[in-house]
Image: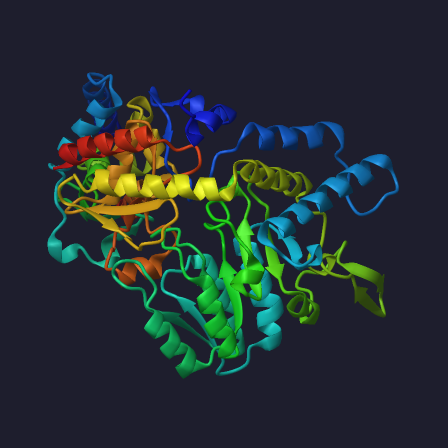
Length: 144
Length: 410
């Protein structure tokens, strides 16, 4: 059920990005998306929630909802990174922990932004995805 | 007939400059990180690997002799290029970082004692900081740093004061800053350091591709540089050391090549420069570095310097037309490096949007985190850096692209 949710959200993002042929248009959209990321509480923007990329910083918090799903909130000091973070949150937030831990995340590839997951991009996104999965896996283990 | 500009004459020698990135023509402005290679260097390496590859300094056969001659010939070219008194004073290394580690480990471990000070500047690359921290922590010595002014020049008064106060055992200073472009008055600094009894090391990583270098005029004990920023291959560089210094230093790495005779009772070490060159070296890299220096000298470092100085001036005035933009590092003497920040915007965002338009620039702290902290630039800078093949038109296009990026982000 939750795996379907993640899959359908990925399909939605891929569909949305297919409108943009030009690289710069894609980034313009990403910048817009960055403005709507569910914001992490300022009080939680501490080192505990900081994901260290080399250049841009990302803060991420994960909470278990009453329905037993995972809710992510985040922020970044770089706008494009924030847009990418926003995409991740949009695809994964609200899904079941197990589904997040096991999700097949292919949408960045499909929309031509996979290079941002490479560690050389130093934007912390790869570490963030890892952190999201780790949190979900830990929660799934507790729920089991 | 109007004479051709330097880039017009040489750009065709750089195959990579013909390629596209994201469907746009590549504009390569990340030369301070690594320069592109001319055909002479590419072909020279291919020629060695195709025609005369063999291990050097041993074997009586023909190929070994050809390879040895070419490799040792490159050492001579380096010695000539930087005005060393002898080829014995040129040690091949993996690069500048490797060369500084060699000095820190061989000279530092033998000479630094508890309470001693190593003095560097706040504009050093991590490569001229961390190797000293490592040996200092082992020896109970201390690392101190000379202040850098807001405009990116070195605080000469603080330099003199710290020499006096700490009486450092070694002074390490960058010839030209990779982040700010500042060219330091290394001859003056070395003279003052020497008068205060310090050994001197100059990091010439950014100077080699841009400036004429004469180590005897500079008067340093050690000078290090890397090949790949000077149109040569990666993985090769050199340490220049004054003969007396190198003679007195114990070897660092042990192995083949660096020995005279080995037995289980004891080993005697080889003569200079081989004493510091354990193992089979990067032969093709060394040969190609020699070719890169030949290529630069074919143009002349004076012409390359003049070209890049003109580019920096042009870039400064073109960039200053963009609102909210501030150039970081405005020293009067600069190599082809322009660092900048734009108010309220993250360098990473700007760099990403420049990449999308085909421009290769660098963003972040450029391996000079202490300098960024000192200047209060937590997210670093965006850096454009130039080479002999960079054109004014490329800089103009970069300014337009940057303007577009800024409006997208605002």
